[in-house]
Amino acid sequence: MKDVDLFSCQQSLFERICSIEELTDAFRLVRRNGGAPGVDGVTIKEFETRLSKELEQLKKDIESWNYEPSPVRRVEIPKPGGAGIRLLGIPTIRDRVLHTAIKAVLEPILDPLFSKNSYGFRPTKNQRQAVEAAQQIVKSGKEWIVDIDLSKFFDRIHHDRLIGRLGKFIDDKRVLRLIGLSLRSGIMSEGVVTTPTEGSVQGSPLSPLLSNVVLDELDKELESRGLEFCRFADDCNIFVRSEAAAGRVMKSTVKFIENRLKLVVNREKSKVALSKVVKFLGMTIVACTIAISPNSMLKAMDKVKELTLRGTSLNMEQTIEKINSWYVGWASYYSMTQYPYQLAKIEAHARRRLRARIVAQQKKKRHLVNKLVERGISRKTAAGTVYSNKGRWALSYSWAVRNAFNNRWFTHRMGQKIVSNRNLPHWFNPKTRVNFT
Image 1 (cartoon, rainbow, N blue to C red):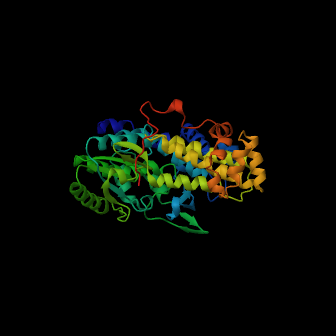
Image 2 (image 1 turned 90 degrees about the vertical axis):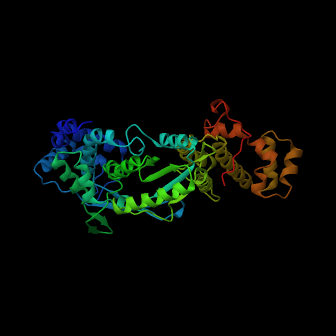
Image 3 (image 1 turned 180 degrees about the horizontal axis):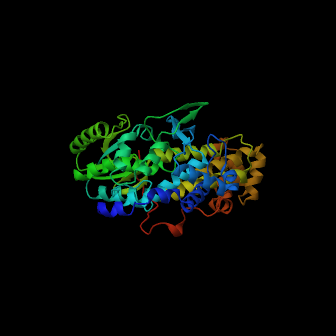
């Protein structure tokens, strides 16, 4: 797109952001996304009861430059696997509406300018596309990966550099000033408000777009060097043909990120390695095929254990409902694996944990024998299994228990399985196994 075309279509960006129509559309998106109230305690429902008045006042404040963003409410979210905490900020509903309106107006202008190798927080791109693109690059022979991990990326975005880069594409200085106000809104933690000199709040609807503006400079640098890469937000993998080349690329890229972008590379987590040991968006490329990474599988196994803990007050139906609630979303994302038995393994683990609970619920051995007989197991086989002095976990995998409470019994209670014979790929061989360790 030519500069003249860019600027001609931006003559009224500020007015579009301030319009009641745009602010109303922005509120609808805020309402759809939900979320907790900000520091003022106003919920989405409360804001909606006086929507016209709120939006009219917001429009008036912005146009008269009386608008002042409220501090964001700081919350701490534990990272998976006990890897520390992630700091999130919750803006007020009023501020969220403005951030959403700014994003809606600027995204159609900025997004077409971003690299085709950038997949995060973009309207027509997603994680699956990023992983599949990585797979194609590995298939081309570039199996060595420079895995770049940025330390506290959102907290270290340089305000002046961000506004300066936005100014290359956004000619309306009023819009840049609004974004500057949003970046410098205070942060309230334990009743104390601090004003940030760098960073963009994770939790603001505008932050994902701004993060792409910052990292697009890295994308352009990598493209100018002729490097193939895939980036999703601050997760960036660069692909080369040899370990030596990967080492050189790592060194020069770290230098560019820290000296030019004023960001910090986490050297402990960044690495040079073959694709089969690099995790990208929870997946890894093994033998040129997409698989769920070992770490993601372990986390899923731990989640199943968490959902089926002994001593819970939940009955079987409630436990199964909780498992379903988690598993449907998990399997929907990880269904991009080209080793479907990985999904089947998680399902099987959940069933075995539930069988072990059924065994444990029978307070006397004879009760378990009767339970198995009720489910069609012969009394001789049931008694031989139960009185074998095996523990609950071993019994849960015995022939008698597995057949009494078979997959069909669980499917009837847990709903349609994600992995079934009719939706496996035509090439899938259930005997195929890959060493993911």
